Image (cartoon, rainbow, N blue to C red; front, top):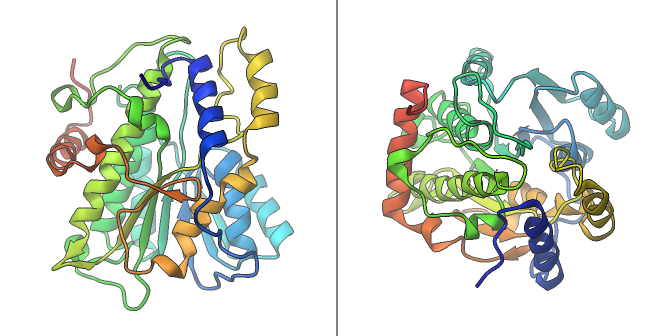
Length: 334
């Protein structure tokens, strides 16, 4: 029976096991490879993995737009100063509020912004269940629903050039959407689309089950979107997903007090630093070797299929439709 990431201790052990047994099968993008002219939007870039990714892409010359809830302006200032890249801007957004996501998208559309790469990286893992502004459970609302709305809007508005939703297909390099999920999506309970978005209460010991649920939603969403963004067998916009592996970030900052003395040193000593964990993200965002491909899933730098449920077209289609209904209604089921 596989180890399930349904409590803080088992999740830590699973992260360690995955890191120990994972083989690197793809060479990371060389440090000398430039990304001049590449226009990237990254969520969750104020700390951890997203911040490391932003520094890496900025050093390569990419133009960055960083929607953030915190870290404005100090994160952007630090990136500009240390990379000598002036094409870095931050925009305020609270992913726990769908109205704030729409306001961000309205601004991008009004500015006629265009992106070559959109990276959905931001995530939360609270100690206890909380609600978003619209009343959804926080991990469902931030990790999944806000990113689904963001992607929907930038496609509909043509901010990511595409044929299907905006009829403004890009010339040359295909745009890419990269979604950060997690290997814990494999041990999540099967999706109940009828109850999608229903508020779930949890505490410190059982919240990781809801985190895994949000990551299964993201993995399924990525596969469905990769199917939708193909026209007559041609990739219109590439959509890829990945688990960065066990990363030493502040995602577990709300871990129970009794676990913190164990968790922090384990993460510091055995988990990958964000700079190394960002390598597969840079690969999916910038590698020329995957031009024309879509639907890739990486665990670190190892390609593998996502879970069967995530790859099921029937489940993906149902999730797409139910998500649209929730975004239209803007409220969870009672």
